[in-house]
Image 1 (cartoon, one colour):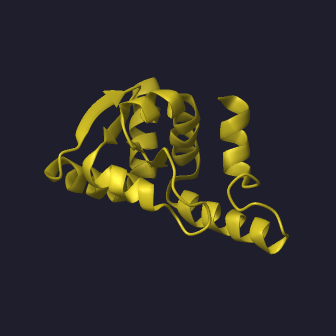
Image 2 (cartoon, rainbow, N blue to C red):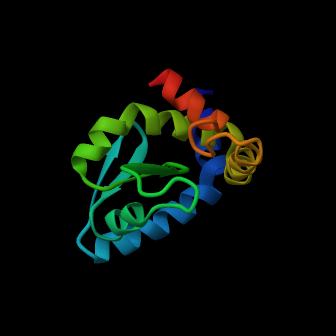
Image 3 (tube, rainbow, N blue to C red):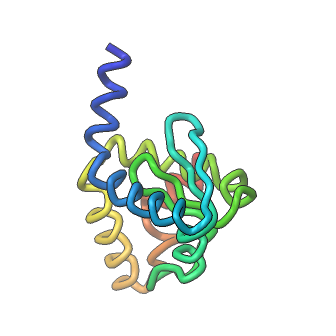
Length: 132
């Protein structure tokens, strides 16, 4: 039963994981490296570093980011430093599946509209910071 639930978690999160795998492929052809840690594929270097250093419009550059079962990091040190936080996001993707990205963006927008920080006041980030 445990194995079945794990497989279902991977399938439920797969839409975001597929997006992450695109970043993995681009990172590998541009010099990036991968490793599997606790059921998540971590990638650093190459395109992943470039993407994270450019950042997202509402948070700017970052050390790491999670897309399903893929964790992007600027470098190995960033992955090690943020691993607990990012693996909370992996579990959130297993819980929310294809709804995770739209909900995350919605909560960021709502926080921004209330005059709050779209990253730090996002409930998904609050959970990750509290747990890690």
